[in-house]
Length: 427
Image 1 (cartoon, rainbow, N blue to C red):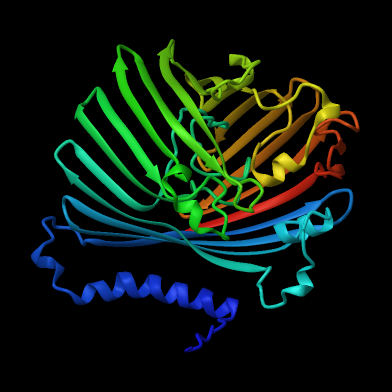
Image 2: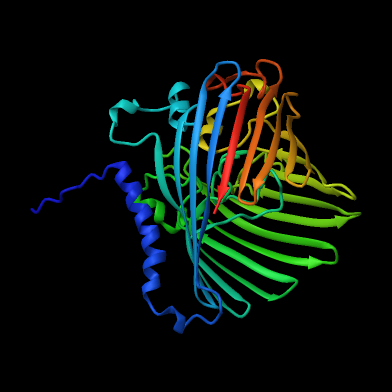
């Protein structure tokens, strides 16, 4: 029998290879006489992106952390009805900003990192978005690794269930890409039908099994959007599939969606709701426990450069008793928060043309703890912004934001006050 030899590629070599492929795709494509099919006057190619330098310091422990994040984006439009898009991301992280270091410190890694020395725990390179779009009249077809971001919420998005994402992540800005195909149809300006069929489960795990691709394990969604007077309305249904254990034990659920946005007296009032339907024969089901819902308002204050936001979030899968918190639900991606009810309040104030002050707070309405995040931003140049701020937490010891949390998985303190500085250069 002929043996198959596995060639191991060093992690840094994979990063360089990925960057080379990105550049080759967009520069090498220029070797073809695209002017023959380019119907516009502008160039069919566009390369752009940004670089972020983020550093954070825990005020009590003195622990430091650092992130270098590079996002490269490219668009290729060979025809007015056909376009391609690619986004790659390089991430390097150290200290308290490195997820492997955090998991290892909490004792949540099922292995010793020293047992796999060839894996690069510091840096990674990913092709996050890679998709093509074809349009024909009112029909639009998008396929590849695409961002699927449904919903109207500002902080919380119960309708966006094709992926897990870090909560209040101020380093990365984009919705993660999902392997999917997404047809849509807009027969008029006031009506559209959006759909998607995904080919990977919600956690986007890197270890997959053949059974993951069975039709019974694939997520999908259908949403109808319309305009009725001053209101934008959307109703839909989706199937969520997630392997929270990472061991091929997928869970699925069907959700009914309802979103709306209404403008009233200069304010935008919005709601976003996802109801988890009961399984056949399930007893004790209540709509309140099955609901993940948002009710929010956004008010640009007349005459001044100030925006006020408020958002109430109900998480039916959460708990009202702080003694029942299970921190494992956060690390697995099953939940973004522990409790059942939250309120977000924020004020954004622009001053002196180039400055902005953001004051944000998130209150756990069940245990009374809260997180506060004031951020000061300044645009030194059109393409260069510096932000500085601090994470502050308030609450009793055993509450979500009060310090050490006693959970079913043990006691963990994830609420260290932290100062940070973030620099972003766009190109």
